[in-house]
Amino acid sequence: MSERKAVKVSGQKKLTPFQAVNGYLEQAFDFLGYEQSFRRLLKDAWREIKVQVPLRKDNGELEIFEGYRVQHNAARGPYKGGIRYHPETDLEDVRALASLMSWKTALVDIPFGGAKGGVTCEPKDLSPRELQVLTRSYINNIGAAIGPYNDIPAPDVGTNAQVMAWIMDEYSIRYGHSPAVVTGKPVALGGVKEREEATGRGVSLIAEMVCEDLKLSLSKASCAVQGFGNVGSHAARLLWERGAKITAVSNKDGGLLNPKGIDIGDLLQHISQKGDFTGYSRAEKITNKELLETKCDILVPAALGGVFDAATAARVKTRVILEAANGPTFPDADAVFEENGILVVPDVLANSGGVIVSYFEWVQNIQQYSWEKYHCNVELKKILSKAYQEVKKTSVRHKLSYRTSSFVIGVSRVAEAERLRGT
Ligand code: NAD
Image (cartoon, rainbow, N blue to C red):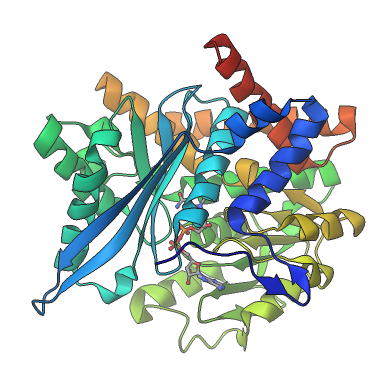
């Protein structure tokens, strides 16, 4: 598969995901006054690995997939970042996601760098055996580059705790028992119970902080959530449990709208019986485009990246955007949101709950000591609140958006580590 090219949309050049991240980085570099060579050092990945992922399918045919691991920066600690299984994942996408991880881990001040991995495949088309063989094949080919003190993968779109368990097992066969090589594992293998909902919990905690600042009661706020997978469904449920009115939700096949609020507990029960939204009668059907244009207080993109360009952004009618997904907003859309007075809490802050709890899992695996159950969520809130306050302070002091403030904080921490190490 060839790398993704920048495409033209309505006469305007649309950026690739990596170009979009670099656009944001340049804003932070300009503010920080960094020289060109140092900018390049921070923008480009330290190492990019592209591997074949051969799979003998159940029907006997051999299919070759493409896999990637991009290790962006490790000045502050081992590389850290999820693994995505998706048909549209490519090297350019993974590069962007790896870079975002470096700024995210630095912003929330946990001792990791940034990385991301992916295999270009549709996991839903694979049997459980095929998925396991594909995962082992991928890990075999990148195994020399990962490790508990080198690079620690985690779940992302299309992967889950079971996939993490296979990764741990495959790595451990070669290198000895290594639960700390991957986070987001099942609890029985050293995972932490709180990890699965951690990203969604982080989104709901940030929602509380933003609402307090805007003097908007979360229990009176209306929210629309795009994407109802791991992150979106937990974010919607936790917001709903805090009293927010979830007026719209969606997945890749379309969405549901109920201006009076969707009973998320009831919807989750429906999904556990029917598998998806099909046949849910207590909300009307809408398209994903309609969801993004729904009038609400808080809009939560929690699906894939590249959702908002300038044209879509102009139709958004919300007060706050909480970027649960990675890279949902192109820079031209960011400018439109700013112009329209919409507060955007960027991905590197809004969805950092996942990597924070992954850090707690890694610490416990390294120490071979399990924390008390309540510890994780208390620590998560502490770290998130500190990062949120720092972003707010930087934003007010320097009149910067929350996104540029987040990048300025993250970038300056990575830059300091690079310089202290002698770069
Ligand atoms: P997932 O695979 O569990 O869920 C993805 C969801 O998005 C599914 O409901 C899918 O139907 C939906 N979707 C896909 N295309 C869509 C479209 N065009 N419109 C509406 N919905 C669509 O993935 P996830 O783990 O929930 O990740 C979602 C986002 O959150 C990704 O951007 C990911 O990088 C980011 N993220 C995930 C984690 C994590 O811990 N899993 C952490 C940080 C950030």
